[in-house]
Image 1 (cartoon, rainbow, N blue to C red):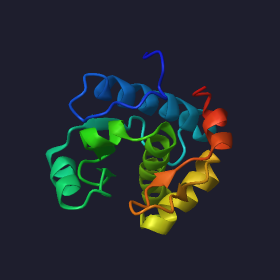
Image 2 (image 1 turned 180 degrees about the horizontal axis):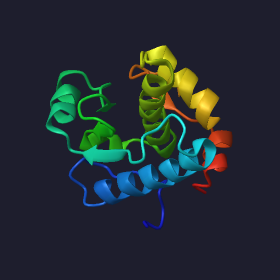
Image 3 (image 1 turned 45 degrees about the horizontal axis):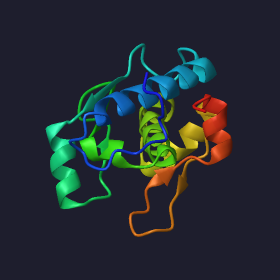
Image 4 (image 1 turned 135 degrees about the vertical axis):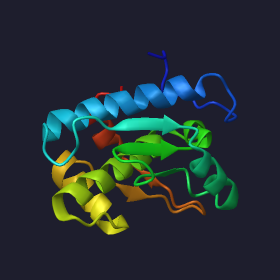
Length: 149
């Protein structure tokens, strides 16, 4: 595990990007599993860092840093997700976990249902930033629940 998950790498090719994303993903996944058990999520959900489609979509529209439904039970992301602040990385990942849970629970993984599932099943409120990127984020209270600090 990295020493400081709050430290944000400057560039996507920084060697700490993949370990940071992996660590944050594992901690969030562990928290979500504690909240839901085996309900609403498959037995294993994997993270695919550097998915070619995610990398390509990011270059077209810099808001697109992650997606689901490309592969079953996989959250795909581009390397640039690892260069974003902690609250943003966790918000994006919580939202993507929400897509998977919403698809399993309600057979509808639209954007609104992804956030509703994150709240209902994981106890996490996904917010959106007011800046130009309008990316998802978790507030400090939710981050503390995950025990990142």
